[in-house]
Image (cartoon, rainbow, N blue to C red; front, side, top):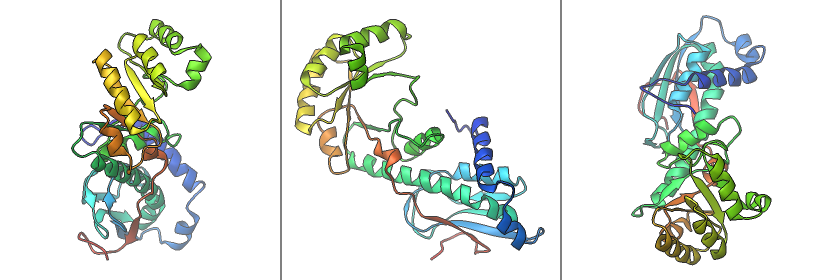
Length: 294
């Protein structure tokens, strides 16, 4: 997974950015190359056209760096800040051709990641006063999972498993294929390292009871009403204090507080990364430095 350490970037991310630029540029930026003089130099400002939580500034910086290392990049805000409409968030100076060639990829990434961070933050705010953690899911854009999960963290949320490789999650089709929850858990337990947890998706009290009996580490309550969740949480905690209880399934801003108030430890929301509105962010050449743009 990608990691940010003291401003450093994972090598894999740089390789991905090169491939995304190649997809966009192809054999050359025809418009820019035929309209902008080679020696033209400009200053560009990137600004918000609507308010929200910004995410992706370090990624935008890397985009411009890959396009042209001679560009000067200055971030005016940091990822995770709530920014207002009109706020200038970045200034970039240098070759006009390079600025225009890198513009779209940098904006695309920041707009999508900021949209995820903003939506995540709205759910986090809805949980104010409760200890429940908000987490994402694997419902991400292929090739962008690590970036999108980064945006969830920027928005104040947490990450669920990153892929099929880092945790056992036994869902309805696994139960059908294995024959039962008990069979699925027993088989997994025999083959995974002792450090790996097993989560079981449940839809009824009977399944919850079976999951507890066979030693599940995490029990997911899938698509349950808040009242049923509360009853399930009480039952689970009475029988095993170490089991983590997760709620999932069609959870919205209108329902998340009641679901969390049932006592669940974690709430997972797939819509954080697959159903969000990208923020409107724009780049303009030769604008004033700093401040805001109307």
